[in-house]
Amino acid sequence: MATGPGSGTTNAEPWGSFDDNLIQGRSAVIDMENLDDTSGSSFEDVGEMHQRMREEEEVTAEAAEAEEGDDGEFLGMKGLKGQLGRQVADEVWQAGKRQASRAFSLYGNIDILRPYFDVEPAQVRSRLLESMFPIRMINYPQKIAGELYGPLMLVFTLVAILLHGMKTSGTVIREGTLMGTAIGTCFGYWLGVSSFIYFLAYLVNAQVTMLQMLSLLGYGLFGPCVVLLVTYNVHFHSLFYLLWLLVGGLSTLRMVAVLLSRTVGRTPRLLLCGSLALLHMSFLFYLHFSYHRILEGLLDSLEGPNLAPIQRVPRDVPEMALNSTLLGPGLLATH
Amino acid sequence: MAAEEEASRPFAGLSDVSISEDIPVEGDISVPVGPSRTDEEFSTLDEPVKETILRDLRAVGNKFIHVLYPRRSSALLRDWDLWGPLLLCVTLALLLQDGTADSDLEGGPQFAEVFVVVWFGSIIITLNSKLLGGTLSFFQSLCVLGYCILPLTVAMVVCRVVLLAAPGTVSFVVRLVVVTASFGWSTFASTAFLSDSQPANRRALVVYPVFLFYFVIGWMVLTYFPVKNRQP
Image (cartoon, rainbow over all chains, first blue to last red; front, side, top):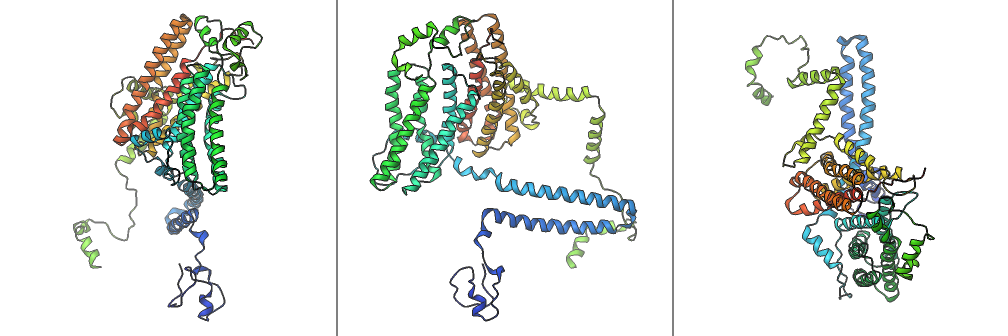
């Protein structure tokens, strides 16, 4: 922050405007030193300035040492050359270390994420339960907790449940791994849909930040987790439809209600909440049906060792046709 | 100057030692611990390879025993090493190979899957426990989580033996029991080491991802089924 010496003039800008020197009639040259450039106060630049100060101290200390080393006559000529070589190597090492530690201290600092993990188990539990109950008050912006522990754990739980579903349904992934697909699906949904809804919210000027959106959608995955846990193990289509509408619907309604409370105007509300509802419900639908195959194959495998259970059975095998006719058209529609 | 004089007064008695001031003092002042450490380092370079390997193996074996009988001891934490987790991970990955489908493309990804699950899972759990206010260092947590996979590896060996011996529903029940027991053992062992470093009210938050991690590994062990008739 620059104030010229003894300048009692009122400055239009806090950084000591260009007019300083002109007013006092000294010179027309703008003294760059007095300008507080906003780019110099950003996160990286402050770190850089700090590092540069430390480096200068170190360099002067090394220079002092180097001088003393070179002056030592009792080392002799050979000692002098060896000392020089060592000095160069030392300086290269120091420079490299400085660069690495600077980068690490700026970007590898885990404390950036620390405030988002500051939760108690009771809070997580209450937020999980709250995510299932739609709120009534939509005229007043509802508070969204900005934490990442709950959402992250829910996404990992969904990954585990999906893995379980994929294994029992006998999915064969050709170009990749089961684990990779499960992680990609769940994280892709969480991050991708959050970003998309945040973008839409930005367009319609809704009051929600990226962190809040991540948190909201993350907790909104609690319903689908419960539904999938039940329906991957108990294979009744009617049960799935019921749970899909009930549990999935409740969690979607909760998210929609919170977003409604933060949006103004009919069309923006329709756009935002409609797209979120559509995406969330169809994600749950997709997760159930894409990894839902005949369970009989697995049961057969428990009796007979020669039957490889986790295998795609081709459609024209007679057992397959028998099973599909028994289970009804609903399953055929998903192939 | 007065302060300097005052400071030098306690050392006034030492000025009587006969070192003349114009001779530069040479030599290196070494702390007593120093030379013996360097001696030790030099001597481990000269020892036979067998001794080096055996020393590391003994350390790993000692930690295995600590995992099998989990007590609240700090042996795993004090001298952490990642040999044990690496050995266990490789063993588990090798045992889990050729476990599922008919295509021979599955052999590769299965190995990589286990590696990725174990190491990235451990890294994420470690980061999580650090963010929640844990006092363990990064590699100590990795060490504990890796060593506690031992019960699940033992369960994998048992499962493979059971599948060779008696396939069928009975074997499924036996495998289920064995895997559940070893999964519980792993979770219990790792919480015995990790929970001391966490603030008391957040232990549940740290234990849950550990539970999930071992659950996924246990699930991979349980659903392993060797395919006997593979077409070349």
